[in-house]
Length: 455
Image 1 (cartoon, rainbow, N blue to C red):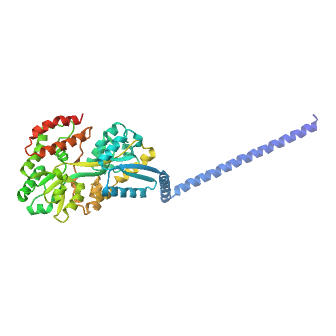
Image 2: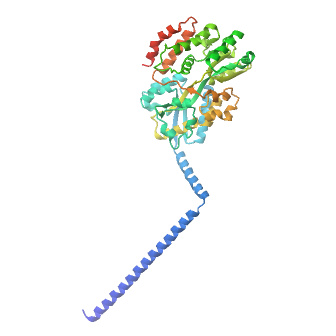
Image 3: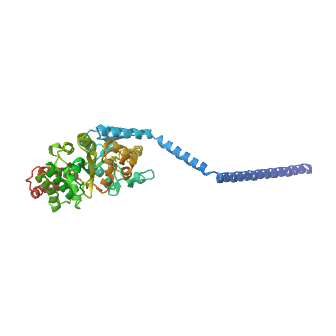
C-alpha cells in the first residue's frame, strides 16, 4: 500500500472516532437531561401530593367507595324466601321486601308462601331429600332446623355477621333471642317474627277492685282469687299450657329437656299450682275456646297470660266494652318464642351475599320497628324497643316491652324437644280438665312417654 493511500485511511478513521465520541457524548448528555427532567417532575408530583387538600383526598376516597358500590350493585342476584305469613302479616312482609328492593335494585326477593306453619315444615322436610330444590332462605322454628344442620344443609352465618360488611351492632339483638340462634358458638340464623308472653288484664275491673298488677306467681294467684270472689268469674287463664309449665320450671331453675324428672317435686308443684286454681274456680284453661283472648274480651275472665302479638285480637274483641292493658309476665323470666330465618348451603356465593344483605335489612332497627308496628310482633332489638317511634305508638304493648324482655329465656333445643313440648300440652290439658286428677299418678304415667320423646 503506498504512503498516500495509507495516510488517507488514517485520517478517515480518526475523523470517524471523533464523530462517534461526540455522538455518544450527546446521547449521555440527553440521558442526563431526561433524568433531571424526570427528577424534577417526580419532585413536582411529590410536592403536589403534599399540597393536596384533605377535601381532595376525601373526594377520591368517596369516588373509590362509590365505584366499589356500583361494581357491587352491578352483580344481579335473585333469592327465594319460603314463609308462612298470611293476611296482614304477609302484607307487612311484602312491604318490607318492596322497601329492600327499592334500596337494592339488583337483588330480587321471590316471596313464596307455603301455607301455614305445619305446611311449611312438611314441605321443608320433604324437600330435604333433594337439597338443590331448597330455597335460598326460609322462615322456620329452630327445632325444625336441627335435622338440616345435622345434614350440613344450613349455612353458618358467623363469618358473615362478624365480617367486615356484617352486622356491627349484632349485640343489640336481645340476649334471649341470641341465645336461641347461636348454637355451639355458631350463628345459625337471624330473628324474624318474635314474641314473648305478657299479662293482658281488664284495667277497668282492676281499678274497680283496687287490684295491683301481679309480679309473681303468688301475687297472680291472690289477684285471681279476689276477682273470683268479687265477680264470680275466673281471675286468670294461660293461653299456652306447655309454656306455662316450661316457664314455671325455668323460674325454679329447671329446664324442660331430656334430663328433666317429670315426676320431681317442682314438676308436681307446677301442675298443682294450676289445678288448685281450677278446683277453686279462680283459674281456667282455654279449652274449647282454644285461645284466652275470646273469653277475656267477653268478660268471662279478668286477665290472661298470652303472646304480646295477640293485641290485634284483644283490641278487636274488646272494642269499647272496657279498658284493657298489658304488663310484663308475673315472674323473673319469660319465654321468647317465634321463628328465625335460615340460609341453605345450596345457594351460590352471589345468592348468599344477596340473601345476607336481605337478612341484615330485616334485622335492622328500622325494619324491626316497622314490622312490629304492622304486625304486633316484638322488635328483637333493644334499640328498637327503646326508640320513641315504637315506644310512643298507640300500641298497649310497646310501652311495657322493654321491661317485659329484660330476662327472656329460650327453650332448650334437642331432637325430640318439640314432641315433648306438644305431649306436655296434651297431658296438662287432660289433667286440668278433670278437677279430681291425681297429679303425681298422672305424671308418673306420662314419664315413659316423655323420656321416649328424646330418644
